[in-house]
Length: 507
Image (cartoon, rainbow, N blue to C red; front, side, top):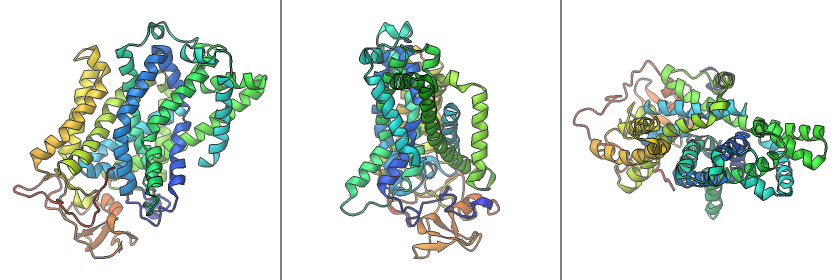
């Protein structure tokens, strides 16, 4: 496996994250999750929304999107933090199957690519906060700050027309793409330690603010960016307001009275922001590409290899000028991203908890899963297809603006229907039989891993870790009676108990 031989260097990508590796406090994990709010993309996007639709429509659209994404991402964040798995492993066990989650890995990798291209360390958090604070304080104390914030000089005639339902849902639709941001947050949330007795409240707060809290931070960033853009719009033209360096230079020039000093401060702020957010996008993207290619190629040369692919593809997107189409790209992406996240939440909450149509445990190992599961994967494909048809105007302009919400509704309703129709037979391909020990040796790589990461392997005559199972191409799934569909007359497995996995709590 090359660079992947050291699981700690790989941050246990494609694996369950063991307790021995989760040594950071909830507070430190939360701080790591805050990297996402340093993105410069938000300032340019918010300016574009306000200019095109006006402040009232933009704000209402952001609030609608936050109201939708908060409950969705709350479920995902707690499932990741309690299950200690990344978004890909969670997807496998949430009704998508082993290969079914390959599609969602591609969706997620695309998300990180979009923002890595658009954006073009945790140790630098406090200098970044200081510089942002200076900029906000300067803009807030400028004459007519409130008026300029709500009525920037760069607003278009359509933005002056007042709030409309169509404008609100157009903005909300684009913002719903941020629901998949919980995947990036999850790359850190999986490192959460188990909650300590008497401190569960702090643990829950760290998970909430580090995961779904991103939706609230997005609203806060909207106010901050419109304040900055409102002031800058009185000093520079519309073409420059959306450029972060020009935006902050205009603000800092009021503070320093010197263009050169203001330019240096703006450059330092943008540099810090780009370092922080691009490290996050590159890191998360490399995890997704690892998941995607390990299943297609049965090879895992190491996460570091996919860093180069992630950066290379982002350079291509920058060269084709994704910036000029970012609002349309996000609106299109929202249809697919929301269908994925909503199908997962439906399975985790409705199927597993409420209706008991699915095993309550998180089963993510290839040895225990069918390659596909129509419950989650099928629901996502149908929801995404219906919403894309709506997006391209088949059902009228109103439905086009509401297309991500159509994806949301279909993806929530379909999983319990499919699970009931299939009687839950597609979730677990075989039950696990493992020796009684907290750690077990892998008969392929010779490493010792947590029991949750292991499966028995008749092909190798021992136990095997989840990563080696993913890269094994010769066995042809001999451990399962069938890899693609339940045998005729088979009964549902994994209900009500499927050892050794623990029951997954989702909230």
